Length: 198
Image 1 (cartoon, helix red, strand yellow):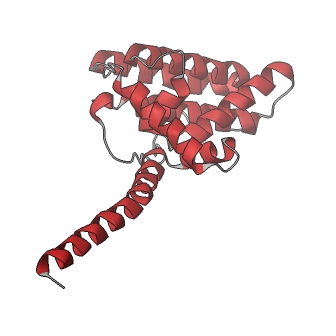
Image 2: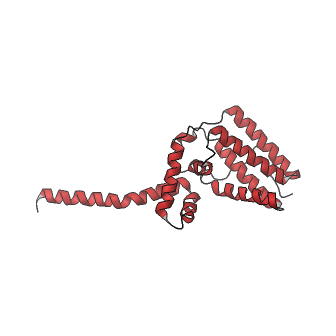
Image 3: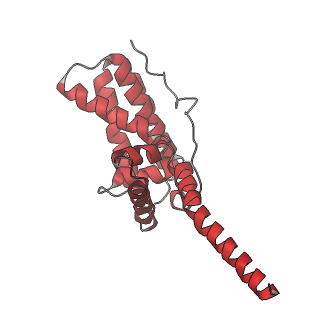
């Protein structure tokens, strides 16, 4: 065999290996970026990984077209004070406090520049680790409007709304953020008591 044939065979092997590895690399990157949202998307597409990955890729494209802006320091402080007020209100009126936290999060998302259409998908690109708790919080708030919801459920909803609000507030350059986001839990609430199941 000539050296040229060996080089061509080696080159084809490298290209084939790259072609086989590319989808796995894409999957890994999407899983890291979206966290639990990746699994939710796959389930939402009946296990069709390719359809789920197209949806998540579309979310990335949507976000690239947005001009997200960080919240300035004064607005961030005002919002954190409002969160503290809402947490204090929780003791006397858990339902109102949770609903106020939801409205405050919506106002912050508007200010940063997340779109109304496809908002949760866009938010999941940078804050995917917190989106499952947000979904649960929204479900709790919807049930609270129709029926009596327990204080513990409302406390959990308020904490999820607070955590996502703080994560969005503290994102200095949301549009330039890259790689997986792993904010974890917010260890300390802004000034004020932690909502309790009182």
